Image (cartoon, rainbow, N blue to C red; front, side, top):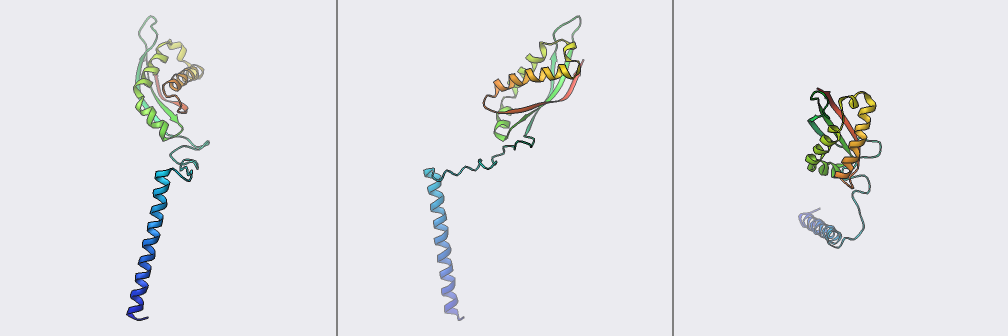
Length: 154
């Protein structure tokens, strides 16, 4: 192959690449601006959503101190929670509503006496009550579970 043929081949290859790049750009432009195609990147499990068996993101709420319902002496509970959600979208909402969630924790636990918190049954009942409160605070976002990571009655 001589220099003239090599130059023509290189020029032909460059023109082909430019045309191909322009076609890809045009198709992408049309899809983006006209909403065509119906392609949903989240449909195949993308966009940070956890699959049914996998654990989702967990938002930590640490060191909440609650005064329990008064009895003869002041008693407190110090706790830390992990709120498991179904994906990054829900995680962002939960993080932004942490103040409201802490208030719900205070309300839920402050209604109880120290005896109510003994044993796994009492804690399970409180988690169930708190789950209802959290679902009202973050409607439309799925809260999968609440994990009590630290719990001390003082």
